[in-house]
Length: 160
Image 1 (cartoon, helix red, strand yellow):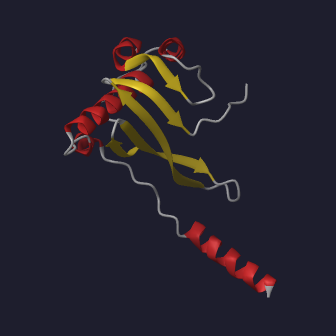
Image 2 (image 1 turned 90 degrees about the horizontal axis):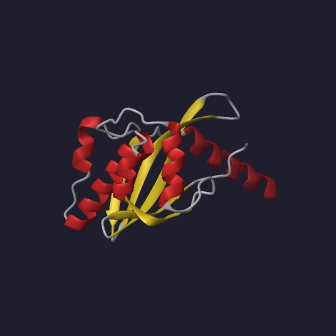
């Protein structure tokens, strides 16, 4: 009986993996609409985080980072030191990139009471088949006094 139950569970989980839907991104021409919100503070927080992502994390504009981040910015990704200065130093060493008016892999952006969460499409290799599949990556920010004050993501320690 235990073997039958295990076989049924295996079948259910296998069907779930096969039935996975691909992750779809927000088209660039629709992203500005997603920044709107019935709550003006939530709309402002979404816009700040959206612009921070585009200008600082993608385009590596450290001057924009000085204006958008709290000096005592808290970082929960183990690959980065906490504080505004260490983050901007890392991105400044990489060098500026082209600033785009949209975020390439954005799936969703939500805001509530000073917290903004962004979801991104990620394409990874299936270790069992070698094929690629899509999944979702999340970043969350805390906004305080109009500045990015804190960040969380699925950061893991990188190999050196």
